[in-house]
Length: 296
Ligand code: NCD
Image (tube, rainbow, N blue to C red; front, side, top):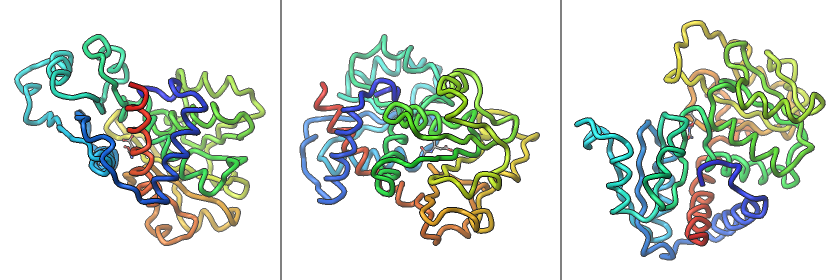
């Protein structure tokens, strides 16, 4: 599962249903007992890495972790040689890498399934599935209006979630709220433009739209991907004051980690669902692992 586009609508429904069963039953079993997973993270991670590990352990699978600080990468080994090598050790790869094009390159070096845990500023499909799962818990028929804010240009979680929502429903209205330098661009902009002007708008101030949205999806500025000195995001700060005029059933999501774009004064607000996303990540990733294994 490298891009959201590879998923059919029935795959998505099956993954959602199985994740729901796993969450309700709090099931643990050993259905992956013969499967060895290689977790290769070439960028920092807390939630994605550890929730994959937790999901694998809950289903009885085995994990081998690659540590880029203590591996032959430090002796100048290429990622291609690293993948060829680890191909001999594992049955499934879970890879996060800063290069957006990494999966196109690596497919030549392994036939084993690869799960994309984040490719640069490209995509993050497993995060999008857990975001969708969380949205469906509050909007079983999907929301009418969803706003994305923060670093829309570089946020792979926003890209994947928009691709996924657009695939399963063509009636959602999308707001993209960001300062000039973080607005959608490139392929992603082309994609949202293909919806037609009556289905999206790109604006600069959350205050203008906060009263009409059902879901607010907040992201941090991806400082590691570019020089951020010029960025001012005061119109994109999400705090108790901002949401005073929001709908009663607004939900606030964030893939985390956060910086100062999302105030801790919202953490105990019933509208905040970002720590529920964290918990759902385990069930959704368990479901994804079962799906991957069933396909191979
Ligand atoms: C995100 C990521 O790595 O893209 N985090 C995550 O996986 N939960 C978001 C981010 O780093 O800002």
